[in-house]
Image (cartoon, rainbow, N blue to C red; front, side, top):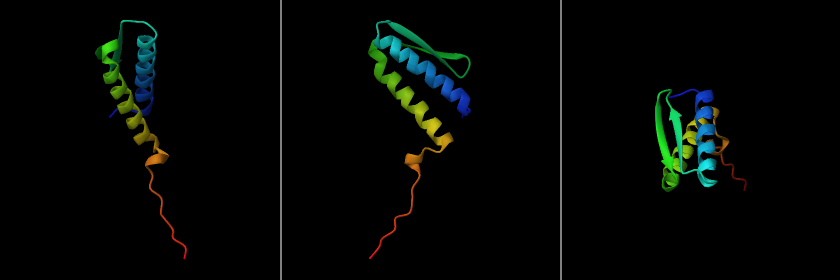
Length: 77
């Protein structure tokens, strides 16, 4: 698993690519793992959304996403 800074960089790049796709560019290339790259077209927006969600989830796992923390439930009678 990549470190937090790397994941945040990939997320920024993916979100920028999505913005460019939505504002008129026909294709955007996103690099990851230092050497791999994927090119997305407007028709691939769902795949790009899934990639962005995956990155956010990984970042949340590292940062300790407060929405995922279970807290005790106390009942008062």
